[in-house]
Image 1 (cartoon, one colour):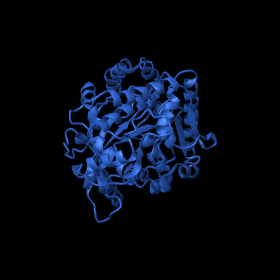
Image 2 (tube, rainbow, N blue to C red):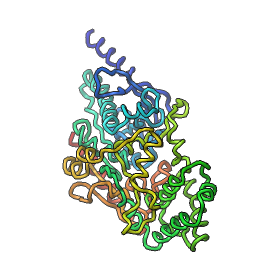
Image 3 (cartoon, rainbow, N blue to C red):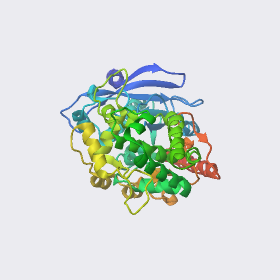
Length: 469
């Protein structure tokens, strides 16, 4: 009788933590978890609603003890990702849990995007603690059932992320190894870099001499031959947008095209000189980049990023959240290289430019402590301490590889090499955007052979992790 009461009480507590909002299909459930706002202050017991998804692949039982926990990227999380993680799940007889990052989408503590609230509750430590708490609650629900049915196996998790969530998965393996069987860090940006000019140097190398030279020429032409009013009007930007912010967009148009595997689309458009080159860059930006990447000048507009209102029906201002993370902790400030080196980026984009932008957005002077972040989580520490428990995969053309770990296949760190092998290539393919159209198998030369090889090595390692626990 006491056991029955205990069982009912435990399930009641779990019901409080987990609320199923709706079944989106026969395979996926969306819901919310009541998550602690401050995991590190026992005097604050407030909670917030954090969105999650539970996906059961075809042919996999919902009672399987194997689970993949996918960390949603720095934006709204609308569903289980439609990428190669679904294939891994099916091959591993596993389900997929997907958790929305705090302060993104509709998972916002105190439903407030103010600078004060972000400064208290948005950091990598809180994000990692959310993931740990999520796993603990799920494991607790199964351990209660196991108490009354000894045939139920212990439930195991492999944590997965790409880009910044790829860094989180590696850091989680470092900080909470007892909660998982292993981790996959795809293009994980585990190094916090203050002056990240090597980003552009890698873009230039990946783009090739002709394409890089054309990007340099069109940037200089826009700086020297076009007025601010002309540029703002041509690129559909707000009339009062600061011109340096528009030049940050220009730099990203070139860099992100290479980063995500659109090398040919970008470089093949950059022919001609002066006004002809400018018009071709403008056409590529408006008709391809804006549409495929879902980017507009508003993503760089300080008034839009600085908007701290929160509308529950719309969700968070994701640009504001990400700028807070970079301004306060991670940096990754992609500045122009030293004057002795060629630059595809405007020389206006200095470290002081980024410091000033952070001030304009948040109204406070903020300096990211990258040294401390790297002492806590840097690439050498992550690679060596988590050896055997974390898989790292990067694409050769991805400029973010400069913020990741060194290649060392003995330590499960791989680099896939081809002319359009970019960001998160192992789970998204080539090109790697849009990210939710399923993995794209269009890697050039022998790139797909390498992708298949690394995916198979990853699968076999994951199987070993699950079998050892």
